[in-house]
Length: 115
Image (cartoon, rainbow, N blue to C red):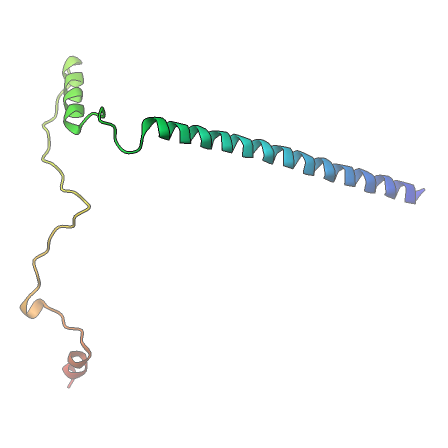
């Protein structure tokens, strides 16, 4: 009798494993198809809209004016427009170092300073 139970358990385990693999393949196939569909939809949207900014995009000045109109219409305070913020892409220029502040890390200076 124990051998029949063992064979039955082994067959049941094998069947469960096959069912799990079948389910995993089905789920993976569905996910892959959904991913492909979304990629093609995104490609179509990019094609229709073009790359880069559109000519109809509002400028920062137009956005600022719209925000001011919105605030005024609702009786809210309109803050003063701050000065333009310098671009972070260009670092601020530093004055060149000179004189005693200039640190010289050359070997000769380091070797000779302790004598």
